[in-house]
Image 1: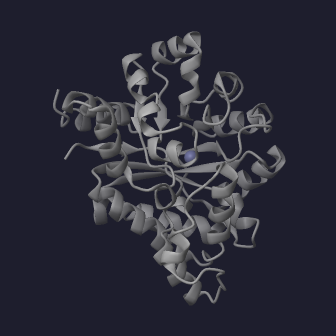
Image 2: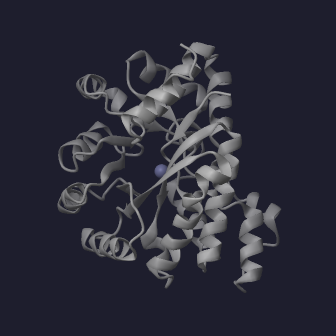
Length: 323
Ligand SMILES: [Zn+2]
């Protein structure tokens, strides 16, 4: 099995319907659905907002530190079976504090599972605190301060949620602060928004990695810029199909991104909602595009290069991918 780094994964998006019901019972949360199958049957979305409505509704069952640890551990176990050896996972902290779950409950639970990831699952793991872009930058700054105050180790910061109508530039000061604190920086861009949205996070937030970025492909100058500087793009094919960012998988720009020499890698985004984990995404694109073993190995190499692992760890992992 090829070793992959998974770099675009929202922990909340790994909440499987069965776990929704299990946690709802344990935490006495009333659900509007009959059972897990009924809930799963609703996982077809007309647009991003349809998905977000369900995503936030299900989160109501996550209440305790143990819930967050179990959620994270279940993802790590599944990711390890998919070939993931490195996971840099997102936590949308604001979505939990906004509904009254304190930051230490969320982050300590997540950190507990991440701290055991190497020993329990053979996965090295890091945590990226993601800010919700549809909320004001002041809210994000408050969330950042709350996260730092927990003392939990952060690998980086990110920006996610609705892209259109919510510019990234107001988050520039917060990103500068995170950089000064020694954290890595990423941001979602070019999923709904066009190339300008990608330029914006590069210029204003100075991100090291772009999440999605598929719409960069319509701007040759941007493609050249990303390729020359080897700025990685964390691509999520099944997510793009489910959220209708592309019409169908065969129309996905992934092969063109590889042909352009971009450091594009494949990720699962919100696997419980979009039809599969990293291995399912790799299998789907391999099938849709008839990717050769060499091309799949390139995806594995790109994912490792795109990670925030120390150079020596990257070299060690890269040496295990067939040339
Ligand atoms: Zn995402």
